[in-house]
Length: 358
Image 1 (cartoon, rainbow, N blue to C red):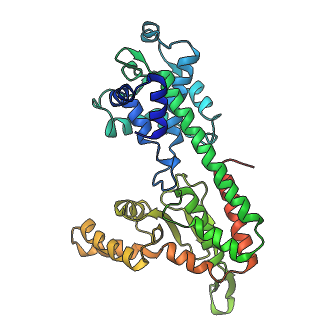
Image 2 (image 1 turned 135 degrees about the vertical axis):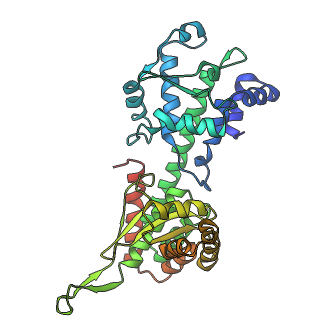
């Protein structure tokens, strides 16, 4: 159980044993606990705010409409309209760009697969476009836990805000630092296995974009029409964008880049399949060498293909290159002051874009 959830329960029920008992009986508390990873630096998952806010939105209106401790009234209720909940979700911290997948299916699917003792009992009930939380998850041993659930979500969001402000402070320090070596040190510190997934993706992009911008190529339809170009790397958008496995795209070569974690090799191959085995450069949040990651990928390709040579060949050829933390830090060593300033500007720009800060 996460510390912040335990503290809320202890404050409500006064004893450790009762707090643990309620937690063990509440599958919804266990779900919130499962989704709490993003408040830590070594997160390997996205924030899933849509999942949090779909439940919070229903609980918010549940309380506002005075259903707390009035089970009979709630059992005769038909549900809250979709637009009312969804519009409210988009007013919450980081919720401006949320889509409707969590409210319609994602929460129920994940809850059933990972938490529910009875997977047939959906946590969100849908009644002809109206939504409510299953009463069996609200009441535990006859006690309405809705206020506790609301406190858990609000505390989780406050911890995220605190973390975001800390990262913004680091970015502000990076932007204002005049010494190039200290700038490099700050950027390098953001490139670690413990970096939050979104931060790592943004910093990796800024470093890669600067590195590739120094490379000049010549392209033309004939020898006489060759023109000089510098490589340009584009970020596809927010880190949780539905981009089909493409985080960065390079012009004019048309290379694809996907940022990922080490170890989850099934995810690598899903990304390869999503773009029909178009070559991908993997940017991996790991201190392992690129040779070690490549070797492990080759072993996985053998398993994934079942030993069929044609299938293995298609996977192997789809791995265009691998970039790890080691390469990113190496490329930082010789950057100029102007390069460091441009990297800092990109980090600030895309992190504020991520947080919807003008």
